[in-house]
Image (cartoon, rainbow, N blue to C red; front, side, top):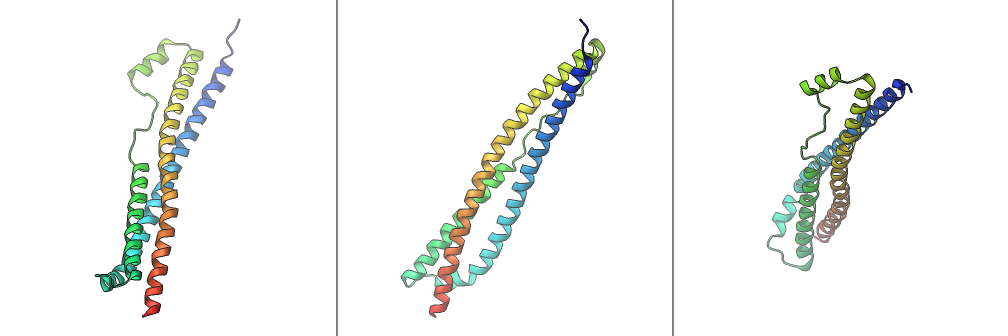
Length: 171
């Protein structure tokens, strides 16, 4: 019975492509998290610039509206920090799987047939894909939570801005 080396080569190429796709998907998720971080940082800076004078003018608070503004600003700031924390955890550096390139792999190539090498490398790619998928899932969880937090932050930010506008309009 002859060995179909073309079949093993196809398996190897398939696994290599799957690995490359998973690594690219992982990188795109990290890029999205970095975009979230930039947006949060910009929004926080703009928000602090906007509220600085307002807060200075209402401390100490004299009425219910001023208390509500201080409370909404505090909650908004906490939401910003929570979102930031989740994004930072999503972009935390982690080991990315790489295929071996040491003397052992050279020896493996020398000692084995082409079909065995294709099959062995295919198995290594399969294991590497699983590890990349695990890391991706962890990062994805943080990015999804950060997105939810960012959405909540937008709501609290909007409420505090509306309260500030009401205060300014009532003066």
